[in-house]
Image (tube, rainbow, N blue to C red):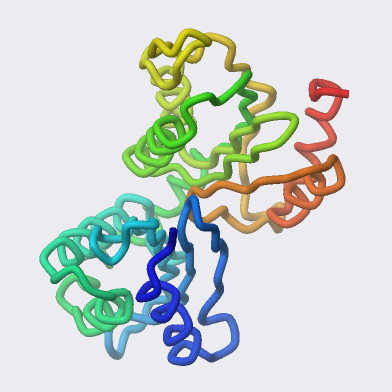
Length: 260
């Protein structure tokens, strides 16, 4: 169950970050908690546009939030530096609502954002060349909390973004460096991520890579942000999920592989 403090904080945040495109509530469920996106500028006079994704688990604010950072002006490694600093700051704060405090801290931390400026354009171009999108198919998820927790952790560690689509077909959409996507798949196949019908921990031996393709900003597609769960009930809702993230071309290609 979501805490009243977390729900109240989200209401306050929506009032504070009320400019166009500043705030978005992406998820609100009793089981998975709240996920909010805040777009802000940091860095004083030489401002950088940064998008912050906060996942407030049901135990929040007793436990710190998960945080993802993205920016069109910074590389993934530079975003990772900012993310880690925010996580460290969140862990040091008392167990009370802290999202606004973290955003303000980042906006005032000019020293940190200056550290992330060197070689932005050159490194960003290199990383764009490495960007790939992959869609994986899972056979089942029995131990939901454990399984999803591992997927979220690996995506953060490997600097991948994506979606876990839960319905008749279980799909994982990943975006990031191709070598990191391959490492994610290796972990899926070699680590015990779920339980079998008898309740014993087991590996994901039936995972399939339905498609993987290079991602390019020239295609007009926006880069995915964060990694979170989307539940769907029908094929039309699944189609809508791919439409929302502008991946209909990939969806059309994997459609023959999905359940009838």
